[in-house]
Amino acid sequence: MSDDEWKAFLAAIPEEKFPSVSQEEREEYLRKEGVRDGDVAWWNGMSHDEQEGLKRVLQTQNLELLMHFHNDQGIPAQEAFVKMHKTNAIYDDYPLSDRHVVELNKNSFQEEDYPLPWQLSDRIGRFMGSLVIGSEIQLHVQTLLQRSTSANAAIRLMIRNGIL
Image (cartoon, rainbow, N blue to C red):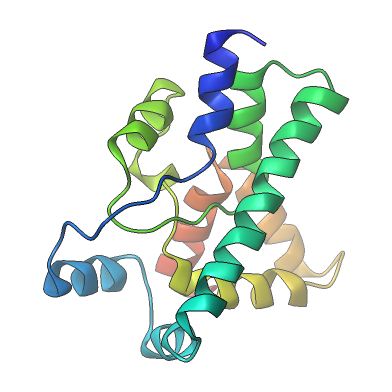
């Protein structure tokens, strides 16, 4: 695997970060992203170990998807990275690491494509799991996902439009 391919794989794994924004800035960011009081209550209702465990599970799923695209389907690493973002919701802590932002921008992602707050993961997972194949809403969501630059961009649009 080339250096560029390794960089793409490594960029898919969020770095450990230390809070570098105030509580007020973090709360403002969460509200801007569409996080509701119920989302915050769900997230804060978990212990730190439960939160970290959920993060590891979702990050592992993303890494497995990335490796599937690259190793099993033969998609070059950079394209696999983009496809992972196109097909799967990606979450991370705020603020994003500089390395992660550089990798996202290098792949032509905009802020709409950036990872979503962890606090939204339950609501998004429940919504996606509730979609009935062939239903009007499922077909609408499928169309949004196909037309969007990433799953996260489509999710942000659905949040703004009150669908999610």
